[in-house]
Length: 458
Image 1 (cartoon, rainbow, N blue to C red):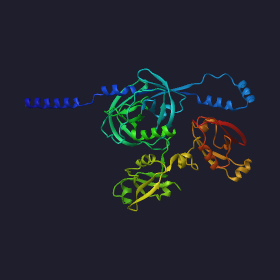
Image 2 (cartoon, rainbow, N blue to C red):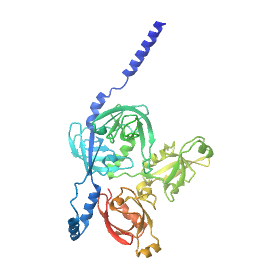
Image 3 (cartoon, rainbow, N blue to C red):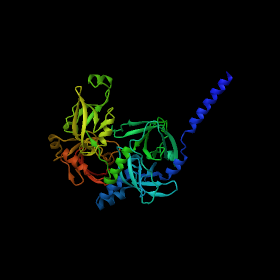
Image 4 (tube, rainbow, N blue to C red):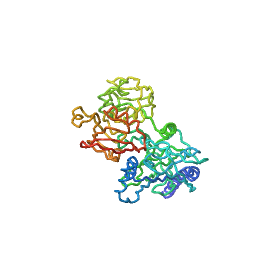
């Protein structure tokens, strides 16, 4: 009996030893790719003082002198500092990081592991994918390659390099827990099929690369799920399929265009699948269709279940925004639906989200670029206020351009820049063309009194 026990123990020992012997050694991989990983430090100046300075700059000289005489000396403007990570994608100085790392930053500093430092400028930034493309003036930089977009599988080993909590160029490893995770933003947008891992990602890792064992980038670290602010083994990365498309568009246009369908949808559970004669729970059930939107023009109706879009299977409702968003506007896509228990194929021309979708506050379907929700003034209100035109401010989003300019609910906007605002259509047209990072004059009425301010979209 003792001999048998010793024999079994020996087998178990060699089995465990053999298993551990097959675990990857990341040392060579880290040595190869680390030189292309960077730390990013940003400085954001006090927005309130900037706005006051911009307003003073637009006043006539006599009023500016009076205002300067009345103003007491102000303490130095506070500067907010933050940090993140990034990596080099081309030898001539293009770098990739997260949008939230450099959002509203006035200064961006890039630091390499060999202690070189550069100032970076933003080529383009995309809030919906949380990606930003930067450029530094340098040549012959070490670079990192992207992996094939569809090569990643759950269970693979992955490695992250970044600067968590400011601890420069830290390395963490783990496995891919899942792919294609749908995580809507605070605005309900859902355009990124995230990679979920158990890699220890913490604040400061944002924008850093996620590698496979070949040293190729499979994702860009973006989010963590945490109750304490630190890692609990749930981290989310933007896949290369999204990153490559965003980088290409930011390089060419400085912005990203996304497809738009114009539907409201939900998942299909077992009971709904039976009632809709689907056979099994699948697809995206359409609850509502935007009037005269792409789906409406293509013949999609409330109650339809989309199961395939432009050659991609729609397993659940979260898959549809990923696929539609990555489809170029103007594409004629085949959409397979179930309607009354029968499978049908429709042809839909995909719209442009930022052009004719809800992101432009289409008749109050969300806050616009200025952070406003607005309403038409009726003829009676105009006569009472003795105004030729204008639009009524119904809501002001916190920390928006409008809020920073001091607008309030109930204000009536009558002018933006040199353009008179008579109705909602004129307003929507004007705000689409407003430049960013430039103070624009805005005139509005508050309790019967006309007020001039400046407003700036950052």
